Length: 86
View 1 (tube, one colour):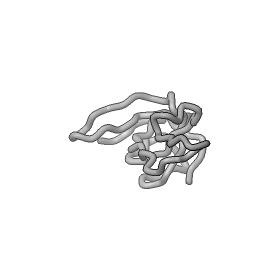
View 2 (tube, one colour):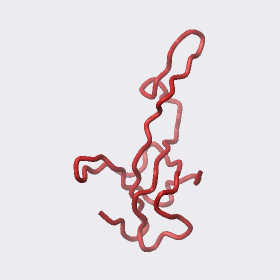
View 3 (cartoon, helix red, strand yellow):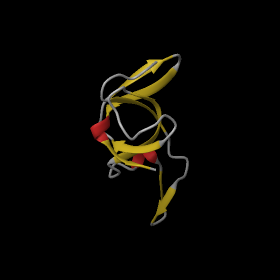
View 4 (spheres, one colour):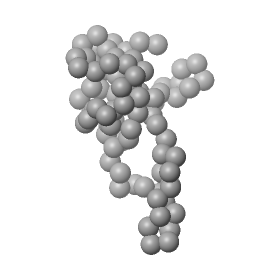
C-alpha cells in the first residue's frame, strides 16, 4: 500500500493509559473532548514534503477515512490535517 499526492496513511495509536478524574476512570471512549489522535505514518504521498514514514503525528479526529488492508485498519488523511509531528 502506498499513498499518492497529498495523502498520508496513518496507523492510529490507541490510548493505553486510563485517566482518573474525581474518582471516575476515563478511557479513550470517554474522552470526547480530545480533538486530535496520535498515529504512526505508514506511507507518504509523492507530493508531501517534510514528513517521513515511521514518524509519530497528531491529526484531527474528523480527518480522512478508514481503510482495511491485509487485516489491519488504517486511516488515509490529507497532509493538511496533520497538526504536529512528535
